Amino acid sequence: MRQEYAISAHYVKNSLNLAKIAQRSTDLQLYRKERNALIYRLSETQYVAAYAFGVVLFFGKIDRKEMGRQIRFFSRSGEEEVGIILAETPSEEYLVIIEPETPESVEFDDVRLKSLNIDRLLLVFHTVAQSVAIDFLDRQVEDAMQRFERIHFNLSKRGSLVATTKEVLQTIGMRGNIVNLVVGQLSLLDKPDIAWEDKEAETLIINLRKNFELDDRFNSLKFKLEFIEDSSELILDILQHRRANLLEITVVLLILFEIIMAFVRH
Image 1 (cartoon, rainbow, N blue to C red):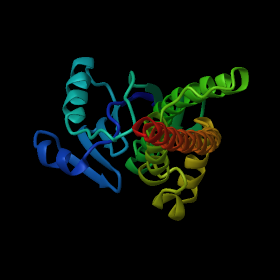
Image 2: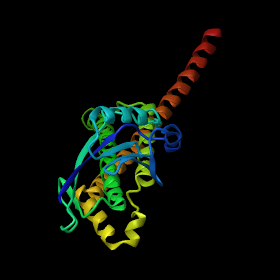
Image 3: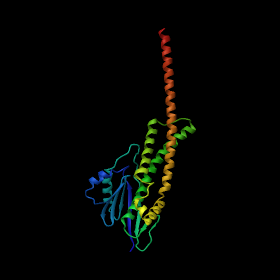
Image 4: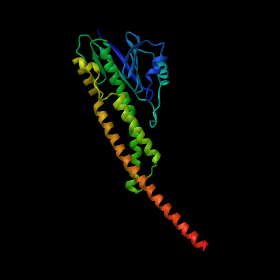
């Protein structure tokens, strides 16, 4: 018998303190603890997952008001990282279809599983959560790139640099935080443990990653971060050169002032 279950994933904070959440969530049944996630079971067909990289995911038929309450609860355990400014939070919807007699498959709008196997579900949860997180990070990187595009435009058209050292250093800090989040908490480069032990699970995670274009989006994000790094180094060099020139001019003016004062005294 065919059954359908909705997944709703939301980016709520730059990062979530799982230890703090585990201590405070006494009214929720902790079903499973992963390296970077807490999985809570509301019923046999309802789950809530909180990820260290700032995503809260709901599975099953859960009231919108209850979702909002849970999101507010988890967001209070969030930690802001220096250099990343939160914009409107991305979200994603995905469908899980259970068909015992049908082979498992991944489609654009849904994934088809044979049963509500928690290991299979966790692979789907994690991939959807990663997709939402990458969406958020990409928005942050796009904002930084737009700032650098304006800087490069002024350099090419007017030969002038419109930027401060503080702005550039903040952007460098943002880039470092994003790289740490992608490589560390998001685990984009790591294969889930179950995929090493279960061939079908490995096929499922490969197809999920292809469907959500995680590798392509990661490579795009990596290219943009490299552009930001190169631009930051260039602008810092220009700013340092400008500061050195200003210092030289200041020294020359001081020497001239001393000479003038010496003439005045004599």
